[in-house]
Length: 175
Image (tube, rainbow, N blue to C red):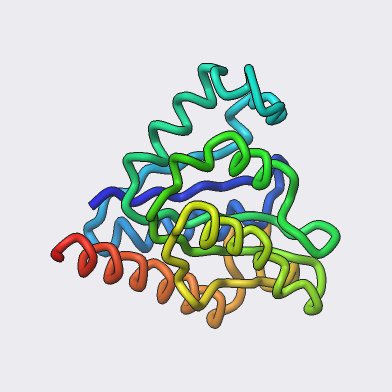
């Protein structure tokens, strides 16, 4: 199985990146190899519907996404939606996401944004025919420190998300 985590925050003190790193540790504890993409390490063009698709870094991301069986996306929530880097990545690579298992880990500043990922997930579900893991992680600012998750409940939810991604991927591959 090929597992992938995408950290889409461009903020150096990203709390969603803390979620992504914790998920990576759960994959490792489970004996699974997981690739890790941090969008902060990429200088992606804005999707223009044309030449941006041929950018070398876009091609590399398309390849990594295409080779994954299950993908967990960690993203910050800004103004009741995922950050622009997440949307831009999806626009640049959407054909690579087809029929993947997708999980979501979000960090936000307020409780009212917990459904912010639905537009992103709907696009993946309807446009790329992805299988969406029905439980996702939404963590508040106070539940995550600069380097670690403070909340036992959030740690447990990340662990459950990783285990569900593994279970779905293995069961679907066996068919």
